[in-house]
Length: 64
Image (cartoon, rainbow, N blue to C red; front, side, top):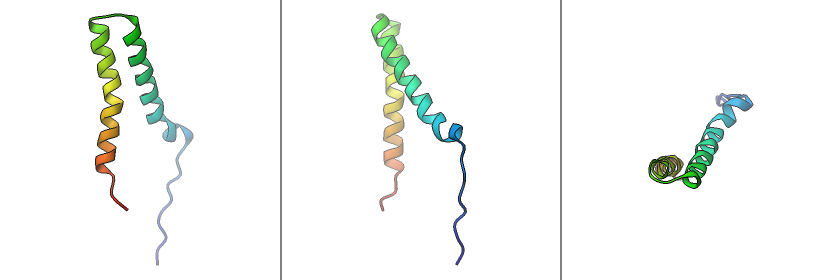
C-alpha cells in the first residue's frame, strides 16, 4: 500500500487565486459606481468572470 504524496503549498500559492478574484470583483463594483457607458461594460465583464469561474468549477466537480 502506497501513501499518497502530500503537496505542501505556501500561503501565496493558496491565496493568490482567491485574492485575484476578490480584486477583480472589487474593481467591477467600483466601476459600476463610477460612471456609465464603458464603465458599465467593464463592470459587467469584471463581475461576470468570477461567476463564470464558479460555473466552470461546479461543472468540473466530480460527484463523491
